[in-house]
Amino acid sequence: MPRFTKVSMRFSTQTLLLQLGVVLLVVLLSGAVHAWLVYERIGDEAENQALTLARTVAADPNIREDVQAISKEEGTPPASVLAAGPLQAAAEAARIRTGALFVVITDETGLRLAHPEIARLGERVSTDPSVALAGQEITTRNTGTLGPSAGAKVPVYAPASAPSPASASDAAATQGPIVGEVSVGYSMESLSKSLAQDIVPIALTAGGALLAGVLASFLLRARLQRLTLGLEPEEISTLVHDQVAVLQGVDEGVIGIAADGRISVFNAAAARLLDLPDATGQDWTTANVPGQLKQLTRPAARDAEAVELVAGGRVLVASARKAWHRKEDLGWVVMLRDRTELQQLTRQLDAVGTMSTALRAQRHEFANQLHTIAGFMSIGQHEQAKEYLARISATGPLKFPVEQAELLQDTYLQAFVGAKSVEASERGVALRIGPETLVRGHVADPQDVTTVLGNLIDNAVSAAVAGSASERWVELELLDDAGQDSGTLHIVVGDSGDGLGGLEPEEVFAEGFTTSEQPVRPGAGQGLGLALVRQLARRRGGDVRVLETGRKGGPGAVFMATIPGVMGRAADGGAEAPTGTASGTEAGTTMREDSSG
Image (cartoon, rainbow, N blue to C red; front, side, top):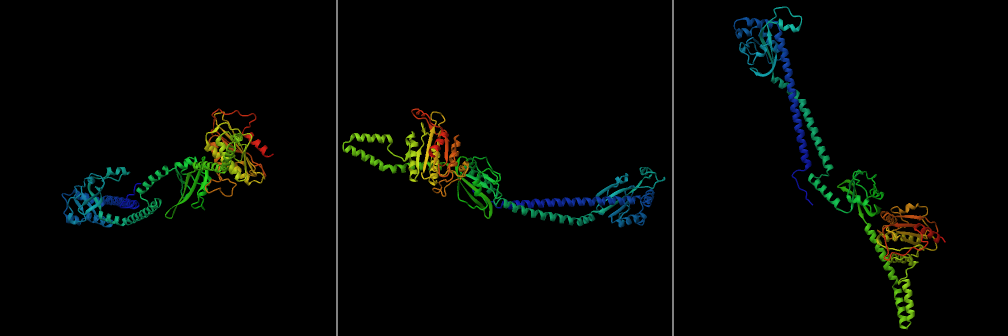
């Protein structure tokens, strides 16, 4: 049996930590992606705002005229002149009004005509203005002299020399040449401040998600421990291997019923003993199993005593135990043990015991016969001794209290029926052989014959004892077909009891049916005899049935059993049947007529 391996950390704890790590990673990645998307959105909004402001400034007619005027001059005015000029004033007013980082106006060569820092007027811009000076608008994110920014560059056109066009598509054709460009930017630091304001709900959302993930992980851990009963995967794997080895390696049937009423275990031995297919997964209350098994697991039952039942042609002993793990109800475990061979051996032992009792009862007769012969010899009466020995040889050395025993030719049947007659005589019942009896072969399967014949005789003797008739008797007729290959033995048994009363003939073959108030002895299988012999006969292709139900005051019920394959041919080929020999059914009818007077 493999031993469980100890690990440094329980599987449930490992699973919990792994889940927490996954949740934390997902939350961090989700938060980072969310923050990045928000940052990009704010940046795009800043670029669009810068582009809008740049277009507005570049479209101002005064700014266009002033830029054109400076562009026509030779050289660039000094910084002091530009600082006091209208372009600087317009650019600063627009910057302050919109909160932009800078609003810069350049000429057609990229020299600054307006800038937040006076000292940089007249200098070339730090970022490339070629795209805007080429007549295209552009949004940018770069780092200039004032720091990182998100902005836009828009060309500045000279005022149009002709009237305004009728359509916007003709506007570019009526504009003058590019005389400069306007560059507007918003500080990235201000974008970060905006992001910092928006990051609070992001952080709260991430924190809530992390908390929910932690709570779900703990709940999942608790459920995992509950479902696995606190066992580790190594332990579960070992238990599964052990369960398969045990359930499939034992001869006893094992049926496990879960707490919800579902069959969780149905091993191969249980299927074989009950002669049923695998019922794993079926509902126990509706499964095709004997009702006596279901009675063992009823809610009010608790570790009920073992019961005997007949199923699949076998005598089974069934017991049920409630299964618990700590305080958790795991359901029921039903155990099935095969007692068929034990019942058959018990029946054979009963037969041997009955015969031995008969032999002990006759020992005095042996002694008397020997003393008689010795007396004849001692007084010289040799002829009388011979005659006495002849009478003993003709009638047999033993005198069983059975009428017409000479009709039985098989020695086994003679001994068994004779022993049963002794047992019946002790209970005040006369056992007799019917006149239609004819057995020409020999018993080839004493075990099955003993089981069927013994049960029928015992039941008939009990019925005769319990009956109300003044004369108590049991009559037995046997007939075989030793001349054929089937080897069938027909048995008809009647008694002087009160019959079946109001019972249907099939009711007496039900498992557990008995007319006795108490078993003959504990574990004797009371109530299983008729059910067992019928299944035994049917397994051989025969049957056991009721020919007559009887009446009160007698005669009682008549049973007939047909058992194929239990008789063999006699060594001399057997005797011919006498004329007028009746069949099994006819013998039962004859018995009825003879018994009723």
